Structure formats: C-alpha cells, structure tokens
Length: 145
Image (tube, one colour):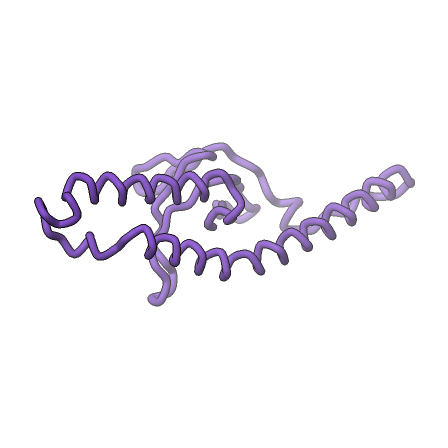
C-alpha cells in the first residue's frame, strides 16, 4: 500500500529525491568528475515521474475518499441504530479480527509503524516500500496488514 500523493510522507520522499539529484550533480560536477548513467535521470525526469504517478493515483484516491465518506455515513447511521434495542451487527471477518502491534516472520519482528520492503506478487509490478499501519490476526491464525 503506497502512501497517498497528498500525504506528508509522499511529499517528503519527492523532496529527498530532488535533494539527492542536486547533491549528486554537484558532487559529480554534472559528469566532469564522474560520468555515470545515473546522471541521465534529472530533476525533469523526477518531476515527470511524480506527475505521472499523481495522474494514476489521484482518481483512485478520490474514489477511496468517496467510499470512506459513504462508510462514515453508514457508521453514523449505525451508531443511531445502536441506540435502538437489538443486536449490534458485525461482519464475520470483523468479529474474528484481533488487532496486534507486532508479529514475527522468518526470524524478523515487525511492528505497526515499521517500513518494510515488499516484493511484488505479480511479475509486472515493481518492488516497493510500505508502512505497516494495521496488523490483525483472523480466527484461522492468519496475520494481515
């Protein structure tokens, strides 16, 4: 799960990349001291890549926001219904979830808030780094994040 394009983490990552390119160019004196193919990637390329990523993510983020608003409205209605007599409704998957703060996997312990390297599940996708925001264990003992 990548961060939203309007998040502080996303903006900080872009700023760090811009800073890296600037320092790299200064140290290499734009190829006079060290000539590398990495010098082909410029701030213009970064800006273009960031804009492309925003074009891809913004519609999805808007859809997520819309769904979140609808969900919040349903929750408000659910709270109103809570005042009425009757059973509290909960989906089976939610009822079985136990939220946890850490888990161990292959001799490593991961905590909520950790950033982790994720290998893609499909061959066309690129590896990426994600922040673990939630972890839970379902009734079958499977851990999800």
